[in-house]
Amino acid sequence: MAAGKCDALFARGDSKCPRRGSSPGGGRPAKVRRRAPPARAPTSGASRALTRAPTSGVSLALTDQRRVPGASRARFPPAPLAAAPAVPFGALPPGTQASLERWGPRCYAAAFQSRRAWFDSHRREVPAFLPAGPLRLATDCGGCEAPVWALRALGVRHAHTSSSDSADAARAFIRANSKPDGPLFEDMCERAHSDVPDHDAYVCGAPCTPFSALHHGTRFFQEAAAKPFRAMINTIAAKSPPCAVIENVVGMMRVWRRVAAMLRRRLHGYRVFVARLDPSRNFGEPVRRPRIYLILVRLDVTCVKDAGSATELAQRMLRAMERPEGETKLSDRLLPDDHALVREPRAAARKAFESWQRRRRPRPGGVSPGASRASAPAPRWVLRHAAARAAAPRGSPLAACPQASEDDLFLTSARERDMWRVVSHQSGSGSGFSIDLSQCLSRCARGSDNILPTITPRGRVVLADRRRLMVPAEKLLIHGLPLHRMLRPSGLSDAALSLLGGNTMHLHCVASAMLLGLAQVNWGALAAACPRQANLDTFGSGRRAAESPIAINVALQR
Image (cartoon, rainbow, N blue to C red; front, side, top):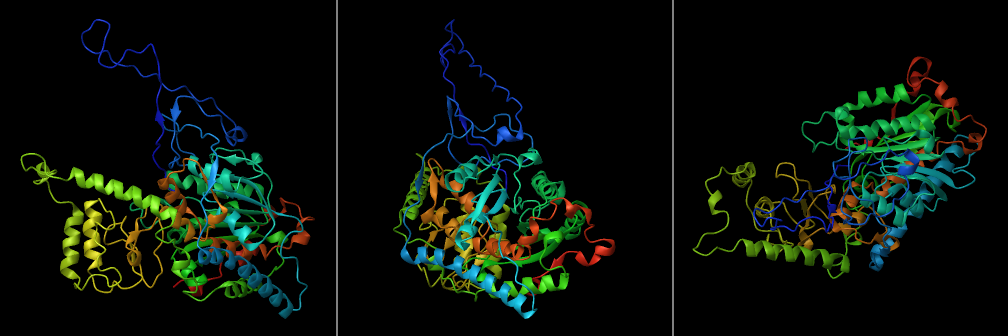
Protein backbone atom coordinates (compact mmCIF):
# COMPACT_ATOMS: atom_id res chain seq x y z
CA MET A 1 0.00 0.00 0.00
CA ALA A 2 1.34 3.29 -0.94
CA ALA A 3 2.00 6.09 1.54
CA GLY A 4 -0.30 9.10 1.12
CA LYS A 5 -0.17 12.74 2.14
CA CYS A 6 -1.59 13.95 5.41
CA ASP A 7 -4.59 16.22 4.87
CA ALA A 8 -4.88 17.29 8.51
CA LEU A 9 -5.25 21.04 8.96
CA PHE A 10 -3.64 22.34 12.13
CA ALA A 11 -5.31 25.54 13.32
CA ARG A 12 -4.77 27.31 16.62
CA GLY A 13 -6.64 30.26 18.03
CA ASP A 14 -4.47 32.46 20.26
CA SER A 15 -5.68 35.82 21.52
CA LYS A 16 -2.12 36.91 22.28
CA CYS A 17 -0.98 36.69 18.68
CA PRO A 18 -1.22 39.99 16.75
CA ARG A 19 -3.68 40.12 13.90
CA ARG A 20 -2.33 39.87 10.38
CA GLY A 21 -1.72 43.31 8.90
CA SER A 22 -1.25 45.13 12.21
CA SER A 23 1.64 45.73 14.58
CA PRO A 24 2.07 47.51 17.90
CA GLY A 25 3.98 50.35 16.28
CA GLY A 26 1.63 50.71 13.34
CA GLY A 27 4.43 50.04 10.87
CA ARG A 28 5.39 46.84 9.19
CA PRO A 29 3.00 43.94 9.93
CA ALA A 30 4.29 41.68 12.64
CA LYS A 31 5.07 38.11 11.74
CA VAL A 32 2.88 35.49 13.31
CA ARG A 33 5.01 32.89 15.04
CA ARG A 34 3.64 29.40 14.88
CA ARG A 35 4.10 27.27 17.92
CA ALA A 36 5.94 24.02 17.26
CA PRO A 37 3.84 20.88 17.69
CA PRO A 38 4.30 19.15 21.04
CA ALA A 39 6.64 16.19 21.08
CA ARG A 40 4.93 12.82 21.15
CA ALA A 41 5.71 10.75 24.20
CA PRO A 42 7.04 7.25 23.52
CA THR A 43 4.36 4.62 23.68
CA SER A 44 4.36 0.88 23.77
CA GLY A 45 2.90 -1.35 21.11
CA ALA A 46 -0.14 -2.10 23.25
CA SER A 47 -0.96 1.56 23.91
CA ARG A 48 -0.58 2.43 20.22
CA ALA A 49 -3.31 -0.07 19.47
CA LEU A 50 -5.84 1.94 21.48
CA THR A 51 -7.93 4.79 20.12
CA ARG A 52 -6.69 8.13 21.32
CA ALA A 53 -8.96 10.96 22.41
CA PRO A 54 -9.59 13.75 19.90
CA THR A 55 -7.48 16.90 20.25
CA SER A 56 -9.11 20.30 20.29
CA GLY A 57 -8.14 22.79 17.65
CA VAL A 58 -7.49 20.10 15.01
CA SER A 59 -9.67 19.62 11.96
CA LEU A 60 -9.19 16.29 10.19
CA ALA A 61 -10.94 14.82 7.18
CA LEU A 62 -10.88 11.05 6.87
CA THR A 63 -8.82 10.95 3.73
CA ASP A 64 -5.89 8.61 3.36
CA GLN A 65 -3.52 9.17 6.29
CA ARG A 66 -1.30 6.27 5.34
CA ARG A 67 2.41 6.22 5.99
CA VAL A 68 4.88 3.43 5.48
CA PRO A 69 5.03 1.32 8.65
CA GLY A 70 8.40 1.56 10.30
CA ALA A 71 9.34 4.79 8.50
CA SER A 72 10.09 8.04 10.28
CA ARG A 73 7.09 10.11 11.26
CA ALA A 74 6.25 13.37 9.55
CA ARG A 75 6.96 16.67 11.25
CA PHE A 76 3.24 17.20 11.75
CA PRO A 77 1.82 13.77 12.66
CA PRO A 78 -1.78 13.06 11.66
CA ALA A 79 -4.31 13.94 14.29
CA PRO A 80 -6.10 11.12 16.09
CA LEU A 81 -9.49 10.13 14.80
CA ALA A 82 -12.56 10.91 16.79
CA ALA A 83 -15.04 8.13 17.44
CA ALA A 84 -17.42 9.43 14.79
CA PRO A 85 -20.66 7.55 14.19
CA ALA A 86 -20.89 5.36 11.12
CA VAL A 87 -23.79 5.28 8.70
CA PRO A 88 -24.94 2.47 6.37
CA PHE A 89 -23.91 2.62 2.75
CA GLY A 90 -27.50 1.93 1.80
CA ALA A 91 -29.46 -0.75 0.00
CA LEU A 92 -28.20 -2.36 -3.18
CA PRO A 93 -30.15 -3.54 -6.22
CA PRO A 94 -31.62 -7.04 -5.65
CA GLY A 95 -29.45 -8.62 -8.36
CA THR A 96 -26.25 -7.14 -6.94
CA GLN A 97 -27.12 -8.18 -3.39
CA ALA A 98 -28.00 -11.73 -4.47
CA SER A 99 -24.74 -12.03 -6.39
CA LEU A 100 -22.72 -10.95 -3.35
CA GLU A 101 -24.51 -13.43 -1.08
CA ARG A 102 -24.43 -16.43 -3.44
CA TRP A 103 -20.76 -17.22 -4.02
CA GLY A 104 -19.69 -17.87 -0.40
CA PRO A 105 -21.81 -20.93 0.48
CA ARG A 106 -21.18 -22.41 -2.96
CA CYS A 107 -17.41 -22.01 -2.59
CA TYR A 108 -17.37 -23.59 0.88
CA ALA A 109 -19.53 -26.52 -0.23
CA ALA A 110 -17.25 -27.21 -3.21
CA ALA A 111 -14.14 -27.16 -1.01
CA PHE A 112 -15.70 -29.34 1.69
CA GLN A 113 -17.04 -31.97 -0.71
CA SER A 114 -13.87 -32.18 -2.82
CA ARG A 115 -11.75 -32.60 0.31
CA ARG A 116 -13.97 -35.38 1.62
CA ALA A 117 -13.95 -37.08 -1.78
CA TRP A 118 -10.14 -36.99 -1.88
CA PHE A 119 -9.75 -38.63 1.52
CA ASP A 120 -12.39 -41.24 0.63
CA SER A 121 -10.61 -42.07 -2.63
CA HIS A 122 -7.37 -42.64 -0.68
CA ARG A 123 -9.21 -44.66 1.99
CA ARG A 124 -8.16 -42.36 4.77
CA GLU A 125 -10.08 -41.08 7.73
CA VAL A 126 -11.47 -37.63 6.99
CA PRO A 127 -10.11 -35.16 9.56
CA ALA A 128 -12.06 -32.15 10.73
CA PHE A 129 -12.12 -29.33 8.21
CA LEU A 130 -12.15 -26.58 10.86
CA PRO A 131 -11.36 -26.30 14.57
CA ALA A 132 -14.04 -27.26 17.07
CA GLY A 133 -14.36 -23.69 18.31
CA PRO A 134 -14.26 -20.41 16.41
CA LEU A 135 -11.29 -19.99 14.09
CA ARG A 136 -8.93 -17.42 15.61
CA LEU A 137 -7.90 -15.07 12.81
CA ALA A 138 -5.18 -12.42 12.93
CA THR A 139 -4.65 -9.95 10.09
CA ASP A 140 -2.13 -7.26 9.21
CA CYS A 141 -2.35 -4.44 6.66
CA GLY A 142 -6.09 -4.84 7.18
CA GLY A 143 -7.58 -2.19 4.89
CA CYS A 144 -11.14 -3.36 4.24
CA GLU A 145 -10.42 -6.61 6.14
CA ALA A 146 -11.19 -8.82 3.14
CA PRO A 147 -10.20 -12.03 5.07
CA VAL A 148 -12.83 -11.28 7.73
CA TRP A 149 -15.53 -10.63 5.15
CA ALA A 150 -14.46 -13.74 3.25
CA LEU A 151 -14.98 -15.91 6.33
CA ARG A 152 -18.36 -14.27 6.90
CA ALA A 153 -19.35 -15.04 3.31
CA LEU A 154 -18.20 -18.67 3.72
CA GLY A 155 -20.17 -19.03 6.94
CA VAL A 156 -17.08 -19.97 9.00
CA ARG A 157 -17.28 -19.21 12.72
CA HIS A 158 -14.31 -17.10 13.67
CA ALA A 159 -12.90 -14.64 16.17
CA HIS A 160 -10.88 -11.71 14.88
CA THR A 161 -8.04 -11.51 17.39
CA SER A 162 -5.97 -8.57 16.09
CA SER A 163 -5.32 -6.33 13.12
CA SER A 164 -3.17 -3.42 11.98
CA ASP A 165 -3.09 -0.66 9.40
CA SER A 166 -1.03 2.49 9.09
CA ALA A 167 -3.85 4.57 7.56
CA ASP A 168 -6.22 6.45 9.86
CA ALA A 169 -9.07 6.04 7.39
CA ALA A 170 -8.52 2.28 7.17
CA ARG A 171 -8.48 1.91 10.95
CA ALA A 172 -11.70 3.89 11.16
CA PHE A 173 -13.23 1.58 8.56
CA ILE A 174 -12.05 -1.47 10.53
CA ARG A 175 -13.51 -0.16 13.78
CA ALA A 176 -16.85 0.45 12.10
CA ASN A 177 -17.15 -2.91 10.32
CA SER A 178 -14.78 -5.58 11.66
CA LYS A 179 -13.29 -4.36 14.91
CA PRO A 180 -11.00 -7.07 16.31
CA ASP A 181 -11.48 -8.50 19.78
CA GLY A 182 -7.84 -7.66 20.54
CA PRO A 183 -5.57 -4.77 19.61
CA LEU A 184 -5.73 -2.73 16.43
CA PHE A 185 -2.13 -1.71 15.81
CA GLU A 186 -1.05 1.40 13.94
CA ASP A 187 2.38 0.12 13.00
CA MET A 188 3.10 -3.58 12.65
CA CYS A 189 6.83 -2.88 12.45
CA GLU A 190 7.08 -1.29 15.89
CA ARG A 191 4.92 -3.57 18.02
CA ALA A 192 6.17 -6.36 20.25
CA HIS A 193 5.31 -9.89 19.17
CA SER A 194 4.10 -10.59 22.68
CA ASP A 195 1.34 -8.03 22.12
CA VAL A 196 -0.09 -10.09 19.25
CA PRO A 197 -2.61 -12.64 20.56
CA ASP A 198 -2.24 -16.31 19.62
CA HIS A 199 -4.20 -17.31 16.53
CA ASP A 200 -5.01 -20.26 14.27
CA ALA A 201 -4.73 -18.44 10.94
CA TYR A 202 -2.80 -15.38 9.86
CA VAL A 203 -3.49 -13.39 6.67
CA CYS A 204 -1.54 -10.38 5.44
CA GLY A 205 -1.26 -8.52 2.17
CA ALA A 206 1.91 -6.47 2.64
CA PRO A 207 2.38 -3.32 0.52
CA CYS A 208 2.93 -4.24 -3.12
CA THR A 209 4.85 -1.10 -4.07
CA PRO A 210 8.33 -2.71 -3.95
CA PHE A 211 7.26 -5.51 -6.31
CA SER A 212 4.77 -3.75 -8.58
CA ALA A 213 5.56 -3.47 -12.28
CA LEU A 214 4.15 0.08 -12.15
CA HIS A 215 6.94 1.11 -9.77
CA HIS A 216 9.86 1.86 -12.09
CA GLY A 217 13.32 1.82 -10.60
CA THR A 218 12.24 -0.18 -7.58
CA ARG A 219 14.90 -1.41 -5.19
CA PHE A 220 12.67 -4.27 -4.02
CA PHE A 221 13.61 -5.16 -0.44
CA GLN A 222 15.63 -1.98 -0.04
CA GLU A 223 12.47 0.10 -0.35
CA ALA A 224 10.97 1.56 2.82
CA ALA A 225 7.64 -0.02 1.84
CA ALA A 226 9.26 -3.49 2.11
CA LYS A 227 9.59 -3.21 5.90
CA PRO A 228 6.08 -4.58 6.52
CA PHE A 229 6.96 -7.65 4.43
CA ARG A 230 9.84 -8.46 6.77
CA ALA A 231 7.67 -7.68 9.79
CA MET A 232 5.06 -10.10 8.44
CA ILE A 233 7.63 -12.92 8.14
CA ASN A 234 8.88 -12.15 11.65
CA THR A 235 5.34 -12.30 13.02
CA ILE A 236 4.76 -15.73 11.49
CA ALA A 237 8.10 -16.95 12.84
CA ALA A 238 7.33 -15.65 16.33
CA LYS A 239 3.70 -16.82 16.63
CA SER A 240 3.93 -20.05 14.53
CA PRO A 241 0.28 -20.17 13.42
CA PRO A 242 -0.90 -23.52 11.99
CA CYS A 243 -1.89 -21.76 8.76
CA ALA A 244 -0.88 -18.47 7.14
CA VAL A 245 -1.71 -16.76 3.85
CA ILE A 246 0.50 -14.09 2.24
CA GLU A 247 -0.84 -12.08 -0.69
CA ASN A 248 1.08 -9.86 -3.09
CA VAL A 249 1.35 -8.86 -6.74
CA VAL A 250 2.69 -11.16 -9.44
CA GLY A 251 5.78 -8.95 -9.67
CA MET A 252 6.99 -10.54 -6.45
CA MET A 253 8.04 -13.55 -8.53
CA ARG A 254 10.81 -11.40 -10.03
CA VAL A 255 12.62 -11.75 -6.70
CA TRP A 256 11.28 -15.20 -5.85
CA ARG A 257 14.72 -16.56 -5.02
CA ARG A 258 15.17 -13.91 -2.38
CA VAL A 259 11.68 -14.50 -1.03
CA ALA A 260 12.24 -18.26 -0.87
CA ALA A 261 15.58 -17.73 0.87
CA MET A 262 13.87 -15.55 3.45
CA LEU A 263 11.22 -18.21 4.04
CA ARG A 264 13.85 -20.93 4.46
CA ARG A 265 15.87 -18.80 6.83
CA ARG A 266 13.02 -17.60 9.05
CA LEU A 267 10.13 -20.09 8.77
CA HIS A 268 11.35 -23.53 9.78
CA GLY A 269 8.98 -26.46 9.48
CA TYR A 270 6.43 -24.93 7.10
CA ARG A 271 5.18 -26.31 3.82
CA VAL A 272 4.58 -23.54 1.31
CA PHE A 273 2.14 -23.66 -1.60
CA VAL A 274 2.45 -21.00 -4.30
CA ALA A 275 -0.80 -20.21 -6.08
CA ARG A 276 -1.48 -17.59 -8.72
CA LEU A 277 -5.15 -16.69 -8.53
CA ASP A 278 -7.13 -14.33 -10.73
CA PRO A 279 -10.80 -13.63 -9.97
CA SER A 280 -11.76 -13.45 -13.65
CA ARG A 281 -9.95 -16.58 -14.87
CA ASN A 282 -10.35 -18.76 -11.78
CA PHE A 283 -13.70 -17.73 -10.35
CA GLY A 284 -15.67 -16.09 -13.18
CA GLU A 285 -15.64 -12.60 -11.65
CA PRO A 286 -15.87 -9.50 -13.91
CA VAL A 287 -12.48 -8.04 -12.94
CA ARG A 288 -8.86 -9.00 -13.43
CA ARG A 289 -6.64 -9.02 -10.35
CA PRO A 290 -3.87 -11.63 -10.67
CA ARG A 291 -2.13 -12.12 -7.35
CA ILE A 292 0.36 -14.52 -5.79
CA TYR A 293 -0.86 -16.31 -2.68
CA LEU A 294 1.68 -18.06 -0.48
CA ILE A 295 -0.18 -20.63 1.62
CA LEU A 296 1.84 -21.85 4.60
CA VAL A 297 0.96 -24.93 6.67
CA ARG A 298 2.92 -26.11 9.70
CA LEU A 299 4.38 -29.57 9.11
CA ASP A 300 3.82 -30.86 12.64
CA VAL A 301 0.04 -30.37 12.39
CA THR A 302 -0.60 -31.17 8.74
CA CYS A 303 -3.08 -33.91 7.97
CA VAL A 304 -1.22 -34.90 4.77
CA LYS A 305 2.43 -35.66 5.45
CA ASP A 306 3.51 -36.45 1.89
CA ALA A 307 4.26 -33.36 -0.20
CA GLY A 308 2.96 -34.90 -3.42
CA SER A 309 -0.32 -35.93 -1.82
CA ALA A 310 -0.73 -32.50 -0.26
CA THR A 311 -0.29 -30.88 -3.67
CA GLU A 312 -2.80 -33.30 -5.20
CA LEU A 313 -5.36 -32.42 -2.52
CA ALA A 314 -4.87 -28.69 -3.04
CA GLN A 315 -5.20 -29.00 -6.81
CA ARG A 316 -8.39 -31.03 -6.49
CA MET A 317 -9.96 -28.52 -4.13
CA LEU A 318 -8.96 -25.61 -6.34
CA ARG A 319 -10.50 -27.20 -9.42
CA ALA A 320 -13.72 -27.78 -7.49
CA MET A 321 -13.91 -24.15 -6.35
CA GLU A 322 -13.24 -22.69 -9.79
CA ARG A 323 -16.08 -21.23 -11.82
CA PRO A 324 -16.39 -20.70 -15.58
CA GLU A 325 -15.04 -17.43 -16.89
CA GLY A 326 -17.67 -14.74 -17.28
CA GLU A 327 -20.19 -16.42 -14.97
CA THR A 328 -20.75 -13.30 -12.85
CA LYS A 329 -22.04 -10.40 -14.93
CA LEU A 330 -20.49 -6.98 -14.65
CA SER A 331 -23.96 -5.50 -14.18
CA ASP A 332 -24.21 -7.46 -10.91
CA ARG A 333 -21.16 -5.64 -9.53
CA LEU A 334 -21.94 -2.09 -10.70
CA LEU A 335 -24.52 0.35 -9.39
CA PRO A 336 -27.25 1.97 -11.49
CA ASP A 337 -26.62 5.56 -12.48
CA ASP A 338 -29.47 6.83 -10.29
CA HIS A 339 -28.07 5.25 -7.11
CA ALA A 340 -27.02 7.69 -4.39
CA LEU A 341 -23.50 6.25 -4.29
CA VAL A 342 -23.17 7.16 -7.98
CA ARG A 343 -25.09 10.45 -8.02
CA GLU A 344 -23.09 12.14 -5.27
CA PRO A 345 -19.58 11.52 -6.71
CA ARG A 346 -20.88 12.43 -10.16
CA ALA A 347 -22.32 15.69 -8.82
CA ALA A 348 -18.99 16.53 -7.19
CA ALA A 349 -17.16 15.71 -10.44
CA ARG A 350 -19.56 17.91 -12.43
CA LYS A 351 -19.01 20.80 -10.03
CA ALA A 352 -15.24 20.48 -10.31
CA PHE A 353 -15.51 20.26 -14.10
CA GLU A 354 -17.64 23.42 -14.33
CA SER A 355 -15.17 25.26 -12.13
CA TRP A 356 -12.36 24.10 -14.40
CA GLN A 357 -14.27 25.35 -17.45
CA ARG A 358 -14.75 28.78 -15.90
CA ARG A 359 -11.04 29.08 -15.24
CA ARG A 360 -10.32 28.29 -18.90
CA ARG A 361 -12.44 31.12 -20.27
CA PRO A 362 -10.52 33.89 -22.10
CA ARG A 363 -9.41 36.74 -19.91
CA PRO A 364 -10.17 40.38 -20.71
CA GLY A 365 -8.16 41.44 -23.71
CA GLY A 366 -8.50 38.07 -25.46
CA VAL A 367 -5.70 36.36 -23.53
CA SER A 368 -6.58 32.77 -22.70
CA PRO A 369 -5.21 31.01 -19.60
CA GLY A 370 -1.98 29.21 -20.28
CA ALA A 371 -0.96 31.48 -23.14
CA SER A 372 2.23 32.43 -21.33
CA ARG A 373 3.24 28.80 -21.30
CA ALA A 374 2.72 28.32 -25.02
CA SER A 375 6.44 28.45 -25.70
CA ALA A 376 7.23 25.76 -23.11
CA PRO A 377 8.30 22.36 -24.47
CA ALA A 378 5.52 19.86 -24.96
CA PRO A 379 5.19 17.14 -22.32
CA ARG A 380 6.26 13.65 -23.24
CA TRP A 381 2.70 12.38 -23.29
CA VAL A 382 1.91 14.75 -26.17
CA LEU A 383 4.56 13.11 -28.32
CA ARG A 384 3.43 9.62 -27.28
CA HIS A 385 -0.19 10.36 -28.12
CA ALA A 386 0.79 11.78 -31.50
CA ALA A 387 2.79 8.63 -32.24
CA ALA A 388 -0.16 6.47 -31.21
CA ARG A 389 -2.47 8.39 -33.52
CA ALA A 390 -0.10 7.91 -36.42
CA ALA A 391 0.50 4.21 -35.79
CA ALA A 392 -2.94 2.94 -34.83
CA PRO A 393 -5.73 2.61 -37.40
CA ARG A 394 -8.53 5.03 -36.75
CA GLY A 395 -12.07 3.80 -36.82
CA SER A 396 -15.46 5.02 -35.67
CA PRO A 397 -16.05 6.04 -32.06
CA LEU A 398 -17.15 3.42 -29.56
CA ALA A 399 -20.33 1.85 -30.79
CA ALA A 400 -21.59 1.48 -27.22
CA CYS A 401 -21.26 5.20 -26.41
CA PRO A 402 -21.06 7.29 -29.61
CA GLN A 403 -21.46 10.55 -27.66
CA ALA A 404 -19.17 9.86 -24.67
CA SER A 405 -16.74 12.72 -25.06
CA GLU A 406 -14.17 13.90 -22.54
CA ASP A 407 -16.68 16.52 -21.40
CA ASP A 408 -19.29 13.83 -20.71
CA LEU A 409 -16.77 12.10 -18.46
CA PHE A 410 -15.97 15.38 -16.64
CA LEU A 411 -12.26 15.04 -17.39
CA THR A 412 -10.15 18.06 -16.44
CA SER A 413 -6.62 16.77 -17.01
CA ALA A 414 -5.23 17.62 -20.44
CA ARG A 415 -3.45 14.27 -20.60
CA GLU A 416 -6.57 12.29 -19.69
CA ARG A 417 -8.75 14.24 -22.13
CA ASP A 418 -6.39 13.65 -25.03
CA MET A 419 -5.81 10.04 -24.01
CA TRP A 420 -9.55 9.34 -24.11
CA ARG A 421 -9.79 10.93 -27.56
CA VAL A 422 -7.00 8.63 -28.78
CA VAL A 423 -8.34 5.43 -27.21
CA SER A 424 -12.02 5.92 -27.97
CA HIS A 425 -11.35 6.18 -31.71
CA GLN A 426 -9.04 3.21 -32.04
CA SER A 427 -10.41 0.12 -33.69
CA GLY A 428 -11.17 -2.84 -31.47
CA SER A 429 -12.79 -0.78 -28.71
CA GLY A 430 -16.19 -2.40 -28.69
CA SER A 431 -18.93 -3.25 -26.22
CA GLY A 432 -17.91 -3.72 -22.60
CA PHE A 433 -14.76 -1.66 -23.07
CA SER A 434 -13.05 -0.06 -20.06
CA ILE A 435 -9.73 1.66 -19.50
CA ASP A 436 -7.76 3.12 -16.59
CA LEU A 437 -6.77 6.69 -17.45
CA SER A 438 -4.49 7.10 -14.43
CA GLN A 439 -1.55 5.50 -16.26
CA CYS A 440 0.21 6.61 -19.41
CA LEU A 441 -0.97 5.39 -22.80
CA SER A 442 1.67 2.67 -23.12
CA ARG A 443 0.93 1.17 -19.68
CA CYS A 444 -2.76 1.82 -19.18
CA ALA A 445 -4.80 -1.24 -18.27
CA ARG A 446 -7.74 -2.00 -20.54
CA GLY A 447 -10.70 -4.28 -20.19
CA SER A 448 -13.08 -5.78 -22.71
CA ASP A 449 -16.06 -8.13 -22.88
CA ASN A 450 -17.39 -6.66 -19.60
CA ILE A 451 -14.27 -7.66 -17.63
CA LEU A 452 -12.60 -4.72 -15.92
CA PRO A 453 -8.83 -4.26 -15.69
CA THR A 454 -7.01 -4.46 -12.37
CA ILE A 455 -8.32 -1.77 -10.04
CA THR A 456 -5.62 0.42 -8.50
CA PRO A 457 -5.97 2.77 -5.50
CA ARG A 458 -5.88 5.93 -7.60
CA GLY A 459 -7.20 4.38 -10.78
CA ARG A 460 -9.70 6.30 -12.91
CA VAL A 461 -11.54 3.61 -14.82
CA VAL A 462 -13.85 4.66 -17.64
CA LEU A 463 -16.92 2.45 -18.09
CA ALA A 464 -17.58 3.03 -21.77
CA ASP A 465 -21.03 1.42 -21.86
CA ARG A 466 -22.19 3.63 -18.99
CA ARG A 467 -20.44 6.78 -20.22
CA ARG A 468 -18.97 7.58 -16.83
CA LEU A 469 -16.07 6.88 -14.51
CA MET A 470 -16.16 4.13 -11.94
CA VAL A 471 -17.19 5.55 -8.55
CA PRO A 472 -15.32 4.67 -5.31
CA ALA A 473 -18.09 2.48 -3.89
CA GLU A 474 -17.96 0.29 -7.00
CA LYS A 475 -14.27 -0.43 -6.34
CA LEU A 476 -15.36 -2.28 -3.22
CA LEU A 477 -18.31 -4.00 -4.91
CA ILE A 478 -16.21 -5.29 -7.80
CA HIS A 479 -14.04 -7.15 -5.27
CA GLY A 480 -17.03 -8.84 -3.66
CA LEU A 481 -17.37 -6.65 -0.57
CA PRO A 482 -21.03 -6.53 0.57
CA LEU A 483 -21.68 -2.81 0.94
CA HIS A 484 -25.25 -3.46 2.07
CA ARG A 485 -23.82 -5.00 5.25
CA MET A 486 -21.18 -2.32 5.81
CA LEU A 487 -21.04 1.00 7.61
CA ARG A 488 -19.30 4.10 6.36
CA PRO A 489 -17.43 6.07 9.03
CA SER A 490 -18.67 9.62 9.26
CA GLY A 491 -16.34 11.88 7.30
CA LEU A 492 -14.77 9.14 5.19
CA SER A 493 -14.03 10.86 1.89
CA ASP A 494 -14.52 9.36 -1.54
CA ALA A 495 -10.75 9.55 -2.08
CA ALA A 496 -10.13 7.42 1.02
CA LEU A 497 -12.84 4.98 -0.06
CA SER A 498 -11.19 4.70 -3.47
CA LEU A 499 -7.85 3.89 -1.85
CA LEU A 500 -9.48 1.18 0.27
CA GLY A 501 -11.11 -0.37 -2.79
CA GLY A 502 -7.90 -0.32 -4.81
CA ASN A 503 -5.78 -1.89 -2.06
CA THR A 504 -8.10 -4.70 -1.01
CA MET A 505 -7.90 -8.40 -1.84
CA HIS A 506 -10.65 -9.98 -3.88
CA LEU A 507 -12.93 -11.88 -1.49
CA HIS A 508 -13.30 -14.95 -3.68
CA CYS A 509 -9.53 -15.33 -4.08
CA VAL A 510 -8.57 -14.87 -0.44
CA ALA A 511 -11.42 -17.14 0.65
CA SER A 512 -10.19 -19.92 -1.63
CA ALA A 513 -6.59 -19.46 -0.46
CA MET A 514 -7.65 -19.69 3.18
CA LEU A 515 -9.71 -22.82 2.53
CA LEU A 516 -6.74 -24.45 0.79
CA GLY A 517 -4.62 -23.81 3.87
CA LEU A 518 -7.21 -24.73 6.50
CA ALA A 519 -7.94 -28.02 4.71
CA GLN A 520 -4.33 -29.13 5.23
CA VAL A 521 -4.39 -28.76 9.05
CA ASN A 522 -5.19 -31.64 11.37
CA TRP A 523 -7.18 -29.68 13.92
CA GLY A 524 -7.59 -32.70 16.17
CA ALA A 525 -3.83 -33.09 16.56
CA LEU A 526 -3.25 -29.37 16.97
CA ALA A 527 -4.25 -29.29 20.64
CA ALA A 528 -1.63 -31.90 21.53
CA ALA A 529 1.18 -30.33 19.46
CA CYS A 530 3.70 -27.96 20.95
CA PRO A 531 3.37 -24.52 19.29
CA ARG A 532 7.15 -24.17 18.98
CA GLN A 533 7.83 -27.71 17.75
CA ALA A 534 7.67 -26.56 14.12
CA ASN A 535 10.78 -24.44 14.57
CA LEU A 536 12.90 -27.54 15.20
CA ASP A 537 12.69 -28.67 11.58
CA THR A 538 14.78 -27.28 8.73
CA PHE A 539 12.79 -25.90 5.84
CA GLY A 540 13.91 -26.89 2.34
CA SER A 541 17.39 -28.10 3.24
CA GLY A 542 19.09 -31.42 4.04
CA ARG A 543 16.69 -34.25 4.65
CA ARG A 544 13.74 -31.86 4.32
CA ALA A 545 14.60 -30.90 0.74
CA ALA A 546 11.31 -32.41 -0.43
CA GLU A 547 9.48 -29.71 1.54
CA SER A 548 10.74 -26.87 -0.65
CA PRO A 549 8.11 -24.42 -2.00
CA ILE A 550 5.53 -26.21 -4.15
CA ALA A 551 3.71 -24.51 -7.04
CA ILE A 552 0.18 -25.88 -7.05
CA ASN A 553 -1.34 -23.71 -9.75
CA VAL A 554 1.27 -23.55 -12.51
CA ALA A 555 -1.20 -24.56 -15.22
CA LEU A 556 -3.33 -21.48 -14.48
CA GLN A 557 -0.51 -18.95 -14.92
CA ARG A 558 -1.79 -17.90 -18.32
